[in-house]
Length: 182
Image 1 (cartoon, rainbow, N blue to C red):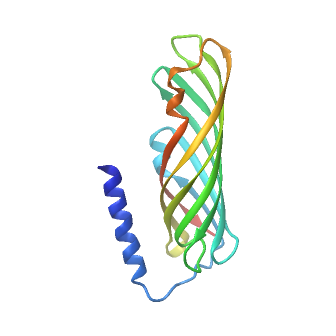
Image 2 (cartoon, rainbow, N blue to C red; image 1 turned 45 degrees about the vertical axis):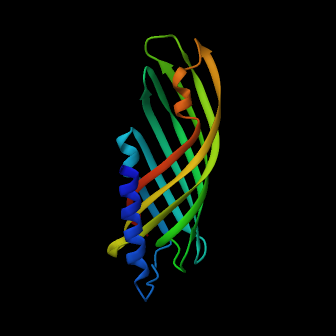
């Protein structure tokens, strides 16, 4: 139900944006933003985006995760480089498609058992979204997509966590970032 609602809202925004005849090119070339939805699950994600050309921007995301799945606590860092292809001649402001890579390395520790180790993974996917640059440089970025991740576990003591499959495989990526352009 939540996914359907998000898709309907995104479609309404898309159709409303195409009704504009004139494209106002944003003078800003850089964006710094924070993913507000990631904060809900205990992940801090910061993104830096730089315009490369009229239709292309590069973005690097850095995140820190501190999250519990059942009895296991995961802590670590995530790196997400991506290229954002904008559909109009106004990179960093508009609709985009963004292929991306994702690397993460998490340490894990089970609270009741002596399970301890690390999990490193690499994957990639694609995201679709819309980024707005408001007056005075306020930025909002709404995006969704999916990716595949495969990783390797390095066990220090105990056994492999049973719930590691919740991190690996095909996963969705949804976010709403707020920041500023400069």
